[in-house]
Length: 282
Image (cartoon, rainbow, N blue to C red; front, side, top):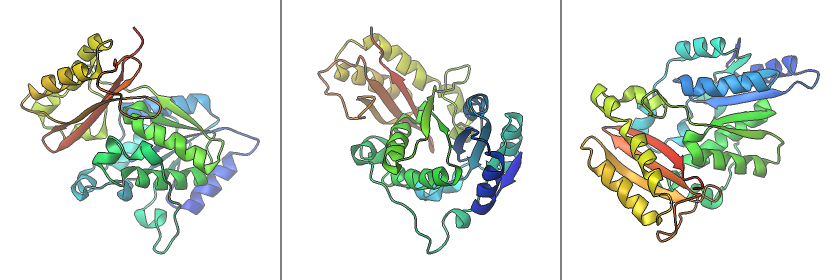
């Protein structure tokens, strides 16, 4: 595996290996890699001639300085996992390399996709995501790019980004990878205390239990989820929303949940956990 730390190195490495019309699979990450990332790597490796990944903690998508400071970082462990999954080129730049002083960056407006849920709770988050992913897409020029559906709203934003950029990259959403206890895998799980980690699967248990109410009005489903989470002293609900999976706009409380997506954010101590579930057809 070749490790590049500058944009110039990355462009040259991809150009050298991409000849002959080879397809490029790309997985952008912020490191602290786990088996959820590995599931994306496996698809990128299997479905493309060249597999490229980036490891970069993007400071401009954090609206909480403490969250940025505490985000786990271990590039040596990340490197080992990438090599094990057959990565051809890993891009691990510095902040100064990605955002040189005085350098121009493209800005994007994602409309209503970035003003609800995560966008409402974390102002500027998706603007920062758009900037860094746009930069990476221009550098890598991937055939396909892989994103986990745990960050469901982010996938919708990235699809809109590709549309606005006018590039042919195919965005490939990948199912949420969960631990044996059902907890959605996340780099932030490593920050949970042992007590909180043991209880965290209750979030997904609650979402699964709410599927039984899919034919009922959204308000009833919300009341059920909110009540269950409130029953756990270790958890503090930030929001639970039922939204259209395409537009991400809230479904009226009197409409049934079926066919829509449930989105949840729960705090456990200082750790913010997200998850989502689809209320499929009955």
